[in-house]
Image 1 (cartoon, helix red, strand yellow):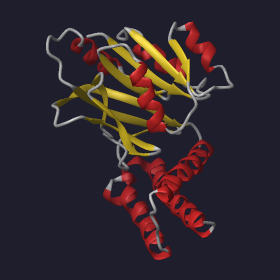
Image 2: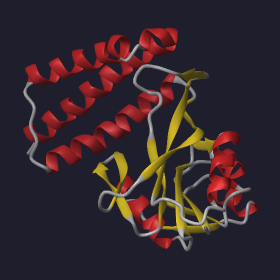
Image 3: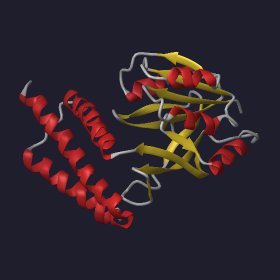
Image 4: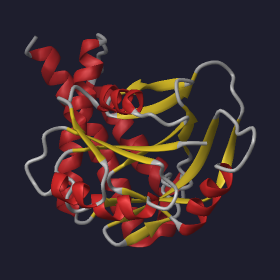
Length: 251
């Protein structure tokens, strides 16, 4: 198995080195597809000898599809810049490279670090993702910014041992900034699809999102971090639908 690791970036100087270090031992190729970063992302990547390419950003789904299409490996491991492999996950992938007949796709559990706390509940774990796949056997789909990789046909997959570490937000300000960014993207996607929402429906979704994370997804077991995640997830729901309503109001 020749393995290409592909990563999309934009101003990721805070995260990219950790990601690159975690895959060096298993990658036959590391391809970074950048959206014209203005920080030190390119300089850091060049120190690790990656293929550093640029492409205008049209959406997470579009950019990730472009990245794997540019890869040369038989298999592709697609990561975000704020992710890194645990040693156990790295070893699981290393073993796969020696198998005679690997499966078409492999899933992995993602463990998120939120403002310094590892989140084991709140609907954030195990957060299983299909990230390792045979080249050309699927593509990224979903609705921006919530992408997911979808295999063509009913292909067999397996869950790998080890976690994919996700360093999501360092501060609450980071979270609110991301909420605003993602809400605009999601609302625009819904608007283009002709989706509408009433005020009653919107507030119902906000309340449900809060209690789902805090109670039904056991967010309370994550302590203060779980409480904050529930509140901010509810706020993210509110922002998405309030922006959608504004888009329809303004035509």
